[in-house]
Length: 207
Image 1: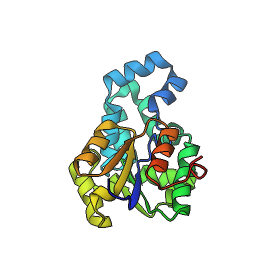
Image 2: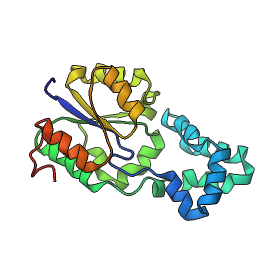
Image 3: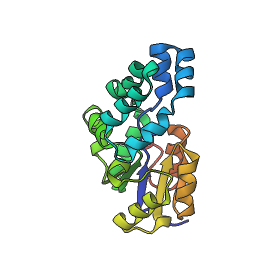
Image 4: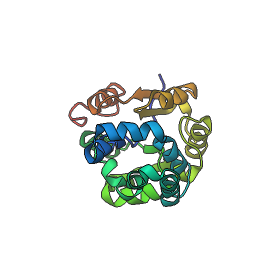
């Protein structure tokens, strides 16, 4: 296994919890939420935002197209920061421990242009990466092969020297096909253990 030259973090459900269904359950109840998500592909609509579509225009157009659910759909824009919460504190500590150890740390995330602007002042650690690869600015999303190619071209590192964590298996599989080292994020402790195993952090630093 090649030495790791950079660690790459996904953001949603790795550094910040991203659970829209949980938010809607708390606001409109599980039954109404299930009915709405069955009728409207909100995650697919969000992909448009993550590809660089204007956040407000995209969500409000979806609300206009679904008048029965218009108020609820607009919440995806108006109350978005409540869905993208809270921070996963242990993962944030791992990010900072890697930086302290002088390991280059990148972000590779499906995130809209405007949504990232909303998140940055709430989560200062989003400004602490050495390089940030934000899908909204790149015009492509994971797991499309082009986004991984763009990261490789920009950073100039051997793909085998990149260690990438993401909570989605399809995103991990696409990176592995490029030759990246990967870790399926299922909790911050497992990620901490992997970083220790790779010799990037000590046990004490990974707490």
